[in-house]
Amino acid sequence: MWRLGFFFHEMAFGLLSVFLPLYVIAIGGSLFDIGIMSASALFLAIPFSFFWGYMCDKTRRYRRYILLSFATLTVILYLFTLSTSVELLIMLYAVMWIFHVAHESPKNVLIAELHPREEWEKAFAFYEVFAKAGWLGGLVLGFIISTYGLDAKFTLLLCSALNLAAFTLSLMLVTDPPFIFERSLAKIEKTVDFTYRGIALASKLLDGIRTKERLKRENPYAFCSGLVLFSLATSMLSTPLPVFFSKDLALPVNFVFMIFMLSSGGGVAGYLLALNKHGRQADKAPVSKIAIFRSILAFLLIAVMLMPLYNMALASLILTLMGFTHALFLVYTLSISMELIPEGKAGLFNVLVSGGGACGSFIGPFIAQTMGFIYVFPITGVVFFLAHIAFKIFR
Image (cartoon, rainbow, N blue to C red; front, side, top):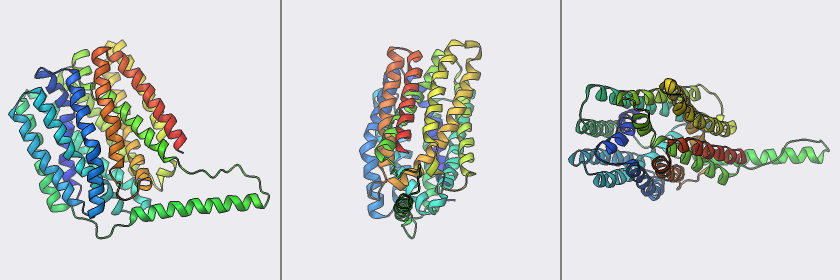
């Protein structure tokens, strides 16, 4: 039940994910402004991801940072309604992201510490199903609001109210875990497993038994590189995409929300699939396969521009598959990161994701503004392919 507040928080940000880029254009901004807004927010969030992750592990208090995040977001989203200045909007958005990341590390640690290692993939998947359902609900709200022509101020006030609901429910339902040891046990288990495999391999070799087995440790630097590259490519594509559908394809705003609703629905399906998996899926997590599949999907988006009669159907299919694969990717990488990242550095996962996302959120709109979307899609596909190579090296 403690996840209920996150449902309303995700609903607010699902609505904002499509509304905000279109709102910036509507009040006289450009793709450059969207890129600067997203990139500055994510870059600013990087040191604070470290900070919040360090603080929650040092104090072993997680609830307070979740409450701080939701309360601050409520206030800042209300402040959005007081001005239509693009510059002020960019500043408020950057400050908002500092506090947005305050709940990410505590949430991840809560999930890991409240479940044994064998259940981490299912626990993360269950949370993401819940959160993605909220995100989908936000997109449905956006579709309804755009269909009935309700104004931007109403939309922003609604997002503020949803975060207030998230704060209230978290205040009542979220509690800190009584004991904190699951991540430490997982690291010990991983070390023991590696030692056992080394002894077993050495015994076979000493007995003259030929084997093709190799004792190989995971490469954490390759994992971090793959995570940054995957986040970079995802942000390059997703940041300017609402504008692409609205302006380049001339789709009505409610149709844009509909396409992203299908993408979110694909994400829910992906989390449900991960939820039904049994065993330690992270040990054989197909993250490299997911990256190469996303690369192919990015290249296929070129067909959306070249086949105008089928552009909405193709875009819907591709984004649904992207949502599905991103869900699996997030569950697996979150579980792996809980093993690889030591205590006190719980924010490192969000730092890597924010770093890649910050660069991509500026590069994507920049390429779209200066060269056109026809270049965004293949360049994104190449970056996804580089992420695929990094994850292949990791395992």
